[in-house]
Image (spheres, rainbow, N blue to C red):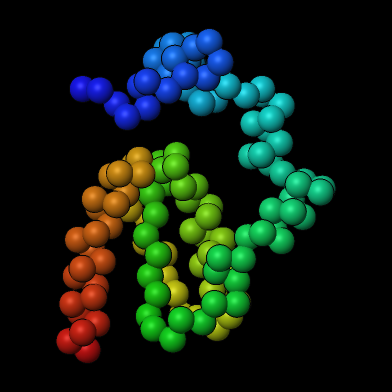
Length: 126
């Protein structure tokens, strides 16, 4: 299969050459110090992150809210959902967080979606 970007090149290397030269894990692209800094931010970095993290702050949707998250999700940290839950509750929202297990992002969605549907059906009947 030909990818649309397969004919693209950067400098003297094709996409395939660049992709083949990348490490197997994104963690191998950065230093241990960088990983430590972003997983345990402090100082100016922490302040900047808090200023930009307003997704759930002050939000009052006026409808029941239930968050679903998986502790094993490497794409969206479980702590993001816990933080959002706290922010919603600070705003007076009666929200809940359902932990769907120590599973990856895709499995989190697969486990959550049937529960979301059941919950919506139950709310509709209430």
